[in-house]
Length: 481
Image (cartoon, rainbow, N blue to C red; front, side):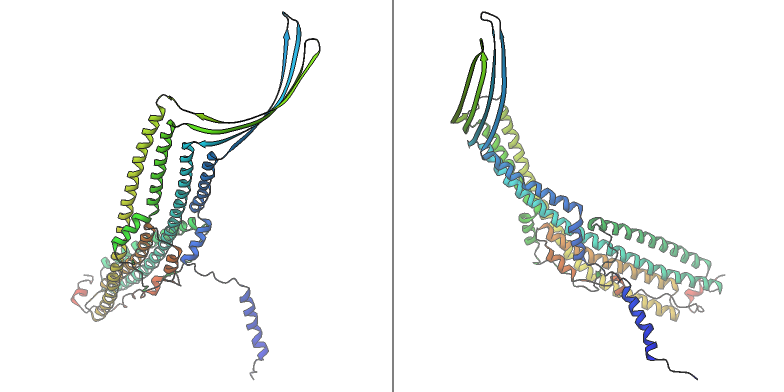
């Protein structure tokens, strides 16, 4: 006789299983682009160096301002003088002197120091622009490394799928050879392609490790799982869709252009400072001191002197002749200013050219994505057609395998075109100085799990059908003689 199990006894193992499951660590979720960028902000060594450089550059302004502010200096002295005199009057003399002095110097007219102060302001502005460039570089480097990891993951997945398809084709060729419906050449050809696919998969896995290491170098920690690009994601195009607008923005707002502009103004200030070597300098000088002297002279005669002194006045220094150094320095700085002007012009042209190229990259990339999407559908149809042709005897297994290989190649090119188009869009905004975290947030909305985005595209085609008797003249030509 069978007895019904008690409900309490049935629930005990379930409760134990739930308790154990609660103690197990939960699987880590895949990281998205924004999370990876936050890690890069906190841990990237290049960005940390740029941040420290900004703090150091900001100190240039107080240092330059100090040349215009009063300078107060103090001095303390203690001396003892001993004189031994033999003639005409014999005797010894000793004198002790204690003194201290405070001196205040306030520049009234020093044109070179004024130019140095203005250069300090320019140095701070240039440092801020350099830091902005470092922020833009961090965003583009992080996104580039992120999508390179995704591309490497796609390559591993596609290489594995293609290897499996070739492996099934190899087994098919071996069975056909055993039953006498194919030659050993078909088996050797399939084996060669399988070995090549194995090598490709190994290389793809090695490339994936390299790309992950590059991303880890930026984020400071290993990132194993990344969210992938959503299939058929609507990649944003450049807005406005006018290359001239982007070119103008690049010429005006590119950080390298801004840095070159500040360098030119700094060079011009340096030329003014060199010419100021002919000008006089005027300072207000004030001092206050105390002197205490005491000693013994001739037959134990004690002397003592104690007094305070104060003075204030204006001091002017006029350069008369310095061996031609001032004129030579002026000519040197003028040539450096001309060089800075040429560098500014080059920076503008480079920024405009980069904007044109990346704008073209986005526009052509979007067109390429649409073309590859159509090519993928055509390749999928070709695989299905070759399968059907194989079943009715007008195609052989190698035709199916070639169609599958074309499908895998098209999918790989499609995924890479999507990544490149997104990166060109980010670079376009970086070249125009308009790239912000909001752009990364917008790209982040295109990502999804699981990380193998390629697996959400239509899956790899199935391998060839089982062995069968040849029914077409093309297959009959492949029999063993």
